[in-house]
Image (cartoon, rainbow, N blue to C red; front, side, top):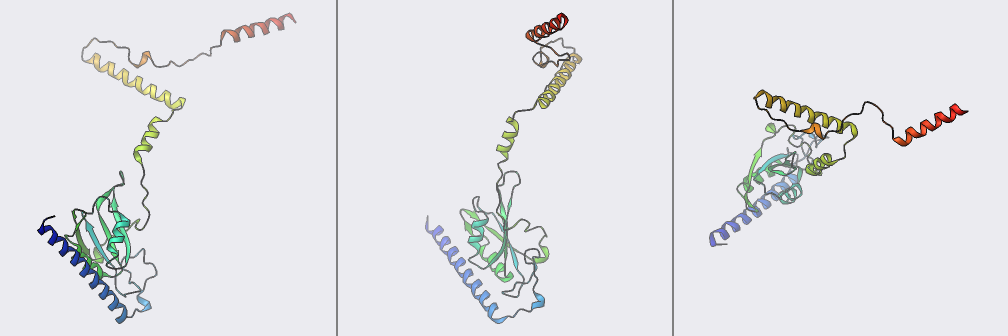
Length: 237
């Protein structure tokens, strides 16, 4: 680490500490000076993002966080940003196919003023080699499904293992027969295309190895001998 990088690192650390102190002082000052009227408090804080909080009497604030490091997930995001103030909800955007992080998240703070301080302080902050991009989002621009599924344990699904299990499972007799018929149909279509091109070419294809359906019931030689013996005994009696 050269001298310039060391100076940038020290400045970033001091900026985070200063923002933490300002957010703490601001939050404590509002708790002492403001009173909350009961008619302004909503009962459902998880559904309505514009709910007035009981502690500060102000609206919560949402911060968009982009360029998040690869292994920085919901637990790490909450633990890192809780140094500024209390957090209501955290939602990390993930891929439905791979369950991996898309690199951006939304963090909802109890106090909107704290959220503004976080957005101003943490914007362009270097975290694990990534340059964070933070932006405060007004409540009137927040989509109703922004925090859908937030504060829930994300269960990663191994789609590759499920597809492998589905592919390698033992087929039933009916499923096997459908597969054979489908292969024979494709084989017949392929022969027609070759003949239409004027090519005289014959190949065994799937018809040679495909099991043929038996229309008549066949019996073993031992069973036929047993039936003949039974008929002879009945005639003798």
